[in-house]
Length: 514
Image (cartoon, rainbow, N blue to C red; front, side, top):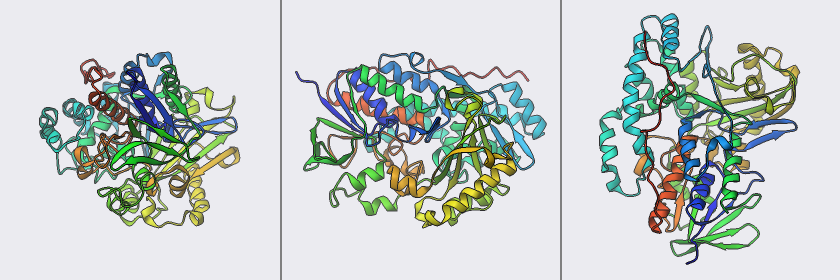
């Protein structure tokens, strides 16, 4: 019997994860990637002798990455080198810095010293959010393809722990009274491109998993994960074609039968997985009038994440500052309101700086370094003219870096540079509205109400990536791919072992003894 043919559109982390798993389970898998290198927003960005991550730089829940390599019959340690970061990152306010750590005693003492009277809230945070995470994690490993799935046992058990109607920021008020301490546990809403005052309280699991399981760097950058996945997929017989754009989905009515490439080549398949940006794919791969729920008009009515203004700087020197650094605006709430409500650029910005060369010498020549800068900004519903604003905003960012970091003379050391604006995300990287974290993770756009792994508008069509369940972020994207792969196997009677949940995953943190 001929092997079932799978085509995957896009070699981002979701597409590559699905390719590994399905190839291991005996499917004939082909991946088409329009860019010259695999990875999507998890690809390497190279400027001369400098290597950057295009997008994700935080690796959390690395046990999920180990799991999906195991699904492919491989040990991730044979392909990648990990470095656990301790402290995890620096959080900088105007007159105060916090260095979060997975050392419970050390973190307890830091909270007591910086925010007296709040220290016991840290213990309560760990204990209560551990329970929430244990209930929620199984929900992130199953599909929600039907309305009845909302009444599945894992979700019913998790429901009392979701804090429905409460925001991430307000939920932190259960543990801490100091505003800046609460912000120190809510900046993770950035991973979802959301305001901490709107982000659902259920996502308090994000700071918890960092404090419980740690934050990691991969030598070579997180883009090395995508390269390793492509290598494994190739070892398993999967064909990965880079520099090959899919122009459209081939259909017989509402059944997808394959893809047509930009050069006119038609490739047939039993199943097609879309790993491109969801809204961009629905706007470009399917002709108008076919989709109803996700027509272009309806897509524009959905809620989307913010965007990001990116600076990638190669420097001819090295600075001593932590690997990850988050600098909060003086008036952080006003800055967040500018991004999500007024949809305008702030002069008082918050920004993130990655100084990966302090950990990883492979990214730049000896004595040089790579500096990655991310500034949350409005998505392209704002109407901001980035052709006009790009230079001014770049100067504002560099001024802010010089004023607030150890890199006072950064301009004099720049030898390589690239800027990506929200307009570039949309025009050059195929990100709908430049919303780099995809559809917003509101209650009405999660689980069954998010575009489903088994795509509801077309048959033999599947989704993986940040635009489907469970959502944005590398670990959840890996899980989305595993869900999709399992559903395809189920539909073709191919046996597989369901994910084991958290039973074998041990937190890295020390016991609380204070």
